[in-house]
Length: 142
Image (tube, rainbow, N blue to C red; front, side):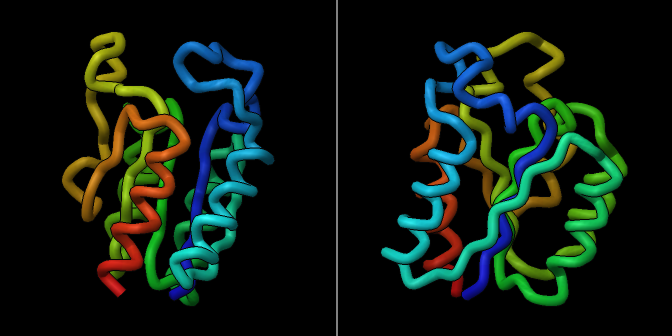
């Protein structure tokens, strides 16, 4: 199965941004782990990250032609981007929403996800291991 991992706004600042919440790993280090975990599960993965909402929407449209599953971490867009939600709603494949921090225990405005009713499952507050759990979920649905 081919899996798209789409990371959103500010995830390029991993390792620099509040390590107590997001961990000390850089995005490059995280992506290397994701690639390794995917290989172990017999999955093929492509990781993408952008700080541009329109680019993220375009990627959602594009991956529909080749991906068998999607992992999304929208960053702050999680809480208000109905444009991305509408793009995600078009998927007819399993979609996993991932958050490094436990958004349910953070500021009130971070506790709501516009995606929660259009994804297959959610993995929150497990740090980088959340991506491994998301990959495992997708491999089980293949």
